[in-house]
Amino acid sequence: DQQVKQNSPSLSVQEGRISILNCDYTNSMFDYFLWYKKYPAEGPTFLISISSIKDKNEDGRFTVFLNKSAKHLSLHIVPSQPGDSAVYFCAAPDSGGYNKLIFGAGTRLAVHP
Amino acid sequence: DAGVTQSPTHLIKTRGQQVTLRCSPKSGHDTVSWYQQALGQGPQFIFQYYEEEERQRGNFPDRFSGHQFPNYSSELNVNALLLGDSALYLCASSLWQGEETQYFGPGTRLLVL
Image (cartoon, rainbow over all chains, first blue to last red; front, top):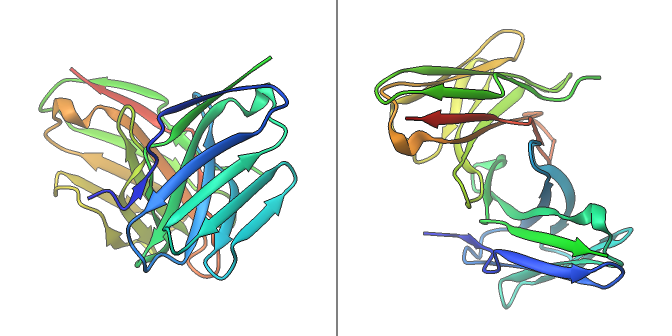
């Protein structure tokens, strides 16, 4: 039972354009969401998070939007840069606390010149 | 300040063997969690250690066991290896109280032949 789903395995975007990565969840008890970025041969790196009391959180070029009624969140990267090419994971803490994360399968973003 | 470190980086074993993976948490962190990332999937929570005790466990068989030492470092042991245990094993560290994000190590890639 996948509680966090990323239905797009890959996304290709031109440099300078917007990248939109999507994530859906099924557990309405989730109240906090995180995005991690992973480069090859490295561990996932925390990127940005959002609490369920907000519908938007922004950090530089990265913005996460949360639609609780649709159980959907998205990560927007504007403008996209070649260095953003990586695998992006959406995650939510399980009821056990922030240290037990449930991850989506990831979306591989390729930003080309 | 060293981040999360893991050893070894790569490992090849045969079915039925046993393996031990090691993790040193980020300086100041007291909690270690282990995740398994199979090819094309997101990380899956195995278990978590705090104060040298297993605090939470994911849906993994008893062949997977762990240990945490007084210096907060941790080991993951897998007995009777199966081909399906081939994966990237990630260690993540955090603070038991108040830390909302986990810091991941680069992982150990295990191949079972």
